[in-house]
Length: 124
Picture 1: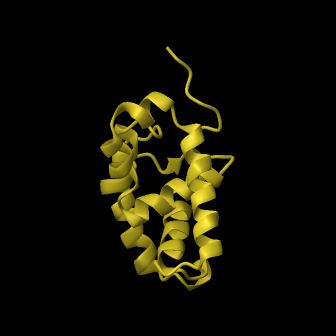
Picture 2: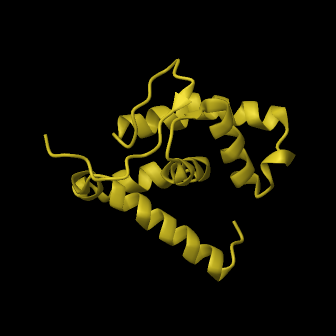
């Protein structure tokens, strides 16, 4: 990922915004947990995209956006094959991992992905 310093600053700002939305207990429980959530490039782009959303988004659109961001190309240039490969990885790997970590609520068969919470999780 050959980002410019300005792009890196923007990415850092977006990641910090995301981290503010996650329960502090989740962040501080173990340092490896956050790393594992964000270690994969597609998952990082998925997290950033979902943090930007205000409403639920069809899985096909999420896959298109993630493929576009990973390939650093406009979404209009993403091929149907790239979109489908990304959708499969989201369903088989990334969405379940984020759900396991409590970052989002998702289960197999869901064709809609909800945005990340805007406020910290309540203590229950």
